[in-house]
Image (cartoon, rainbow, N blue to C red; front, side, top):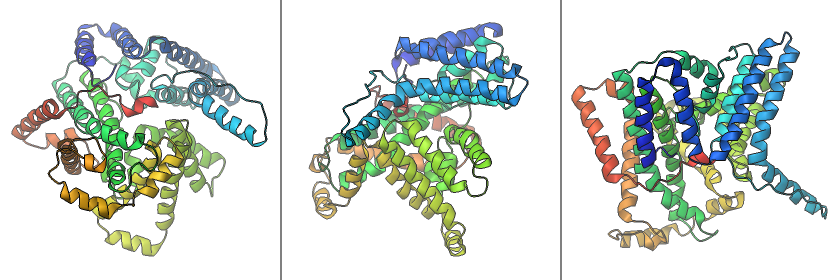
Length: 488
């Protein structure tokens, strides 16, 4: 069920109302059943995969806790990880590995082939797999007690607001909240509704307005576009992804907050950060912190304690790329981002570099960071590495002649003169709303919208609320486009 659908507009208030009318002891059941309905709306039979993961990890966590030696605990943890990663591999990576293996065999003129599996990737599988794995890992470390209430644990994996696209929660944060009694609270309801409205605006007003333009550029054959259309896509694509994904997170967080549940922060104005380190510390925090805690730190500690920082960064960002998709372009995206982080941190050790950056404004640093990160996004969005390289190559062709054409067609109602089948009005609206978003986010840099609003007068807040509602109604693109991160 999509957050930006009519179905969810009925589903959410009904479930929330029933939640507060239901006795505390039965709320887990209501939320679990509601989450099942929410997930089964996409593809009903795939709930069996979720059920398998839930049952395995629930039983394994209890077995881990019952063991007396670390070796036994580790054995059960490995069993759990194999089960979780095995499911993920079969549905997401098997065909990719088989394709590359078959290509390798063909180099040796071998006639052997691995047959492909015709399976559709279950929606959100990568998200709830990592969330389930964090539970057994934390239990094995002795940092969290195994949950004996099967329904509560199942709800931890299936809680509908963050089920299909995160944030990727930790058991310490979410499971204890399901045991707590929740009461209707005006402040929770107010801040939750603000987050939902803010997320919907980012999704249907900005992301879904930029989406058709970006999709058109990326769907055409290599060489079809040169120059300015590619530059427009280069700038628009990262904002589309950011508004789409952070919009989902805002809506998820808002839905949970109205019921009294707090989800972890997933974004902290990443598009306004002054360097690559701070960008990654503010982007998809639940994923980057997962890899930091469960991959980066253990790897450095156990394998490369002295010289492993750069290797660990490379491994983490390559794994992050692989997590996003079974394609070489995601791996290249991970490698290029790792190189950016490594180079920046190497330069940080240079006194001249530190002096220059100390004199540089945060805004200039932010522009440079966006310029470099946006280039890596081309690999993220392109259908292949070859496609991405061709786009980068053609981005600087015919710019002068196209600029002349643009000047001659400034009053045109459409962008057909650039071979873009888009309305000029929609294009300039997108520029306007992205600019407004960045200005507003600069006001609550590294904080959040609600804390910024609470510092304002009551009159200002209500004007802001009504403005959000008006913008949503007047300028929303109500075409029920999927959230981009659903594919992961």
